[in-house]
Image (tube, rainbow, N blue to C red; front, side, top):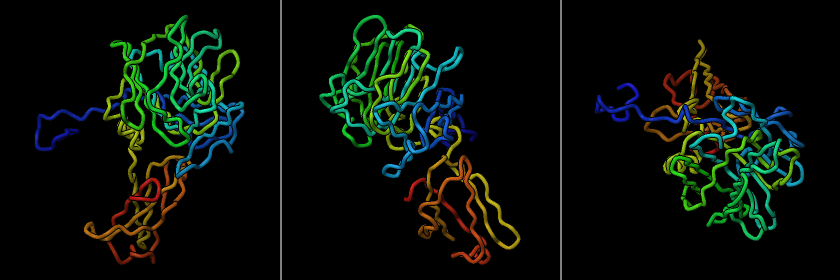
Amino acid sequence: IEEGTDPMDPKDPPSSTLSDSLVAYWPLDGTDGESTPDLGPNGYDLNLVSMETSNFVNDQGRAVASFDGVETMLVHNNEEGEELPINQFDLYTISLWVKITGSGQNDLRFFSEGSTVSGDPLFNLGTRNNGSDNTVDLYLRDGGTPNHQFSVGEPLDGEWHHLAYTYDGKEQKIQLFIDGVLDRDDWIFKELTSPLDTTTIGGILRASPSHWVNGLVDDVSLWKAVLQEDRVADLANGMDPLRLAGGSQFRITDVTRDAEGNITFSWNSRPNASYAIWVKTDLMDEWEELDDGFPSQGKITDFEYPTGSSPDPAVSRKLFFRVTEGDSL
């Protein structure tokens, strides 16, 4: 059954994907010194502002971007015809992981879309404007109120949390999810119609930069669709946005075995990630770990499994391999 969801039903439709909805995906795993890549379909790389290689760090098994709250920022200058800013769409979702302490950080922004022409129109997600707690501050301004609105939960508590913001201009409804669970859907709706030409992480860029946040941000993805709650939960549970979009799924892509029995296999990988590699000779056996921290080689990673290893590929003609991101099955 080609692409069907139920192999027992020939009339079952193909499973839906979000491949046409993904606008940008910034893993924030590393940099070439000038930018950090967009792995989405459009290649909207983010330019570094007062940042360098040392601003991309490992934290609790994550490769993330670190912002100092003084001058660091990641910027995309939006051009005519692009799919940024994301708020140009009637339907959109912003998904990201943050490790930020909101209390004591007054009115600072971890995601922003602004204008270098006018200081008035502004769309921000950030810390509460008076820094009194760990709520998320949603700031919508385009010639009037409501300006600041706040989450019920307090995810800016210095620990890692997943946030997803959805906007439905047709139904005039905004939602915020914290760790895959709906926090609020009763926000005062505000449509921004003035053009915005910057999309930034770590602060605001208008005619000049400002409102820099201190903290860590990871895996930012933008979608021109309102992701349903189960899809948001998938992202909050660690699903790669590319996999959710239905493209570039994480898998072993190539296996070769030479005349002596040496095996080399490859998988599509993320820069600066690390992988655990497992082997077994029979699917009924337990997996045997070969490596618990094999470093990524970029978008494609190769692993050599030579003869003489245990189990020996020169002896065991049938071998099964598994690759996982991180160090667990």
